Length: 330
Image 1 (cartoon, rainbow, N blue to C red):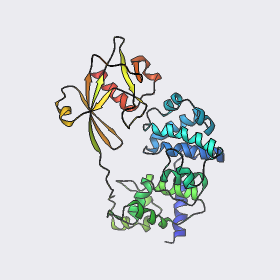
Image 2: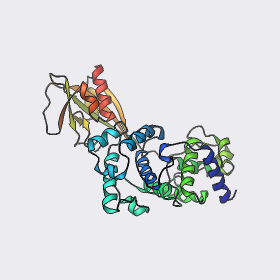
Image 3: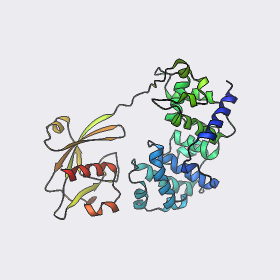
Image 4: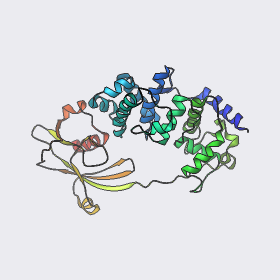
């Protein structure tokens, strides 16, 4: 099949099968750029179904770049609460400020300028260029990678490298509707070319797919090893039943967010701990956590005493909530 026919089939499929996502709804060009920026930052390391309610709430309360640049951090983080990776929210505000001050309020349309914005790397820059500016660019996300791996039946380490996958994108050719086309290819990966059960007979490019012809749908990935780390968390509750938390300045994860006082410990100390233990996965870290009740806790400038009835008014990361829920059951 010619590339012209491939792009035609992909767009035809997209027009009839795309998801009605809130950031895709018809709006002004200016608003579309803002929606694309917010949604692409939220979609970093987070699934679409998780992002949808957060996106709707976020753009309702922070509807444009100007309001984003001036929003108070407490409100910003409350809108983000539960979505995780809170540095994304802070970077989003920094990006809004820079767009207004450096780029005259206009979201940049080229890769170098976009990558100069906090929290925007190669993929996000290219996604914005394609979706918001209709540039002839196909971003390489996990869905597009999977489609390419199956179309070409790529299995070897050198075949599935980012560099080689970028080269293979020429398979898709170009289309006049670049914004829709980029989203269509990502959508095929999300809805049709699924990781374990691809719906090949619904796929608009199955006749071009080597994996379909071979009936070999296994996906080979370059595994990122999860780091196993051990921590001891200190739980202190005063006479008023208030928990002591710290605004984290110690660890690289959850910077500035309220966490229980904690320290990294050895595997031996963790193994010998006699109290409650829990596991929490965060990004590429497998956290083994020993919970320790303490009678005295040194008060620090970045410390907080929060009562159970006050928790709803604070922006707490899921990490802290999981530990808190465990503590309440002990």
